[in-house]
Image (cartoon, rainbow, N blue to C red):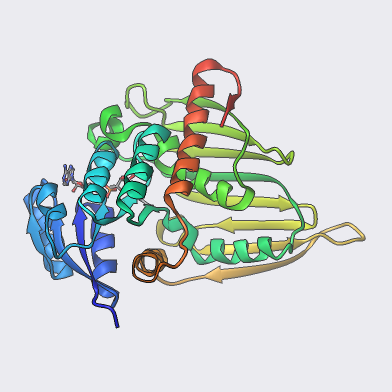
Length: 338
Ligand SMILES: NC(=O)c1ccc[n+]([C@@H]2O[C@H](COP(=O)([O-])OP(=O)(O)OC[C@H]3O[C@@H](n4cnc5c(N)ncnc54)[C@H](O)[C@@H]3O)[C@@H](O)[C@H]2O)c1
């Protein structure tokens, strides 16, 4: 058996903690060191994951016992830390979005290629069981050829949002489209491929977050003729995740992500030759959110055994190109090429 992968986590907030615990719990890895500019957070996650803590990310990427680095800081630092970690010979799992824009994402991929190291983007939604099962059925042609899609993802913000890094353009890069919309872009890419054109309108309707959008409405058009719509919201007062895919022979409808997004379900509709209501089956996926654990196994498999994984650097770049095109369209009022 290969020795476990030594892991360093940079950024010990909500997501860094999850990543550190996933690394510590997996027999293929151990969490060696964690880092946060806020000492208490680093200390707390270090204690939970059985790791040491440091205050400066450079001390993480210099350590010889660190083979892989998780970068889970605010978006504005993702590219700099990722490129430096790859340059130091580490494999990297960088959180979504893959930096500020496609240009930063390309820079990160370039650094991974030069270093010959694995670079993964944190797209944990691809590992949610309803989405995994929907992909299996879509690939098997159960609903025919996909012709259009509708997806929505949102939360209701929180008082004081305007003081968080997500409300600061330099640290966040964008608003609702960048934050949750990038997951939708990635899922549309996974099911429908790369679109050719995008169109968007943005709103800053409620939250005082400057020129960042609290709602983004986007459309994508594909060479196949397929069309998809997307809505990412910070005024979705009751949390919502919904991805609906329509094919020539039926539909795949995913709702919920567990927790305060509600029970995760996949409903499959099979169109009847005689018309009328479709034949419908609904699968429910209850219990803890295993997507973080599954995604970590995928990453360690790629690093240790060279296995193919989901959420590659190429996938991250496509998602950023889709989001960039939405912003370009919103600025010009015209469709933008992806
Ligand atoms: N995959 C997902 O579904 C998902 C969900 C939420 C957030 N994210 C992403 O994860 C990243 C972190 O988000 P979060 O919600 O955990 O934010 P957070 O604010 O909870 O955590 C960020 C942490 O980084 C620390 N930090 C800031 N600058 C640092 C630096 N230079 N060095 C070390 N630590 C630093 C902060 O002190 C904070 O503890 C973001 O890129 C975000 O987009 C992904």
